[in-house]
Length: 121
Picture 1: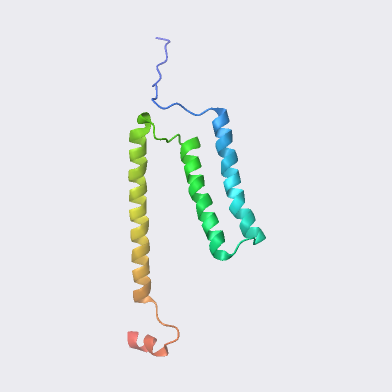
Picture 2: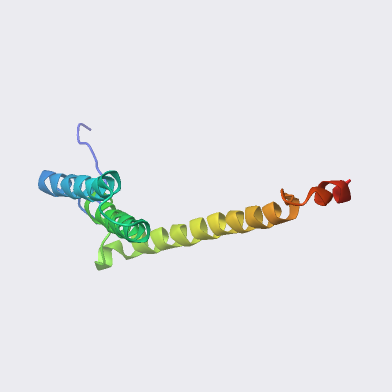
């Protein structure tokens, strides 16, 4: 009765080297936009493009090195669950932004039109 039973996962955990690599990439992908913004090296739109590109690559780095999601057959169900979660989050956030935008348009008064406040009463 002294035997311990453990569940054998189909997906193995990463090694110390893969975690260090993921951490180093995450730090680099954080420093690139920070340095660009603080130095003012690029204009506004091009800085935003670099920030969004670094954010997307950093998401992929986190998924691969820390969550161990890849395209292998053993990870198929995990990937489907992740994609379903992404779809639900996009729907919730998108719907919330849509509702707030419509509410803003329906409730905000035009500050340049003094007649608008008297018409609302």
